[in-house]
Image (cartoon, rainbow, N blue to C red; front, top):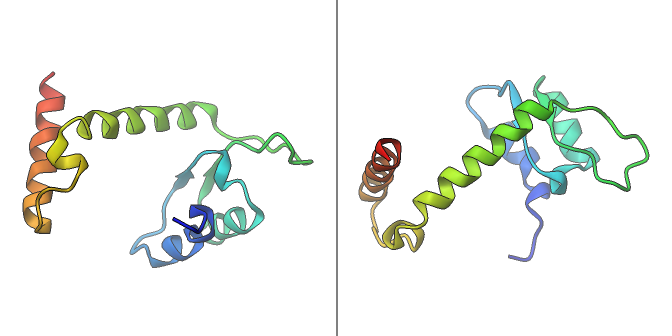
Length: 108
């Protein structure tokens, strides 16, 4: 909606039950607040720097390339209309549908 996702990421990282090994995100998350929150979790920031950032820091390009695989997987899941529109009202039924779609995708 009205707020950028990168402003909420530090709160989400703090709420995780376990510390992540790496945080993989796109250029929109290349902010000082996000990088500080990731460093506070002792995690690796796999976020490419924006073109206008003065200090162009390095990042793991191979790990960042795997992000595309995850996005394509969710894109294939969303081809199912019921999953994309969250037709199932209960969390249990929605999760069961996600498991079924993931299994069908794996069999493809």
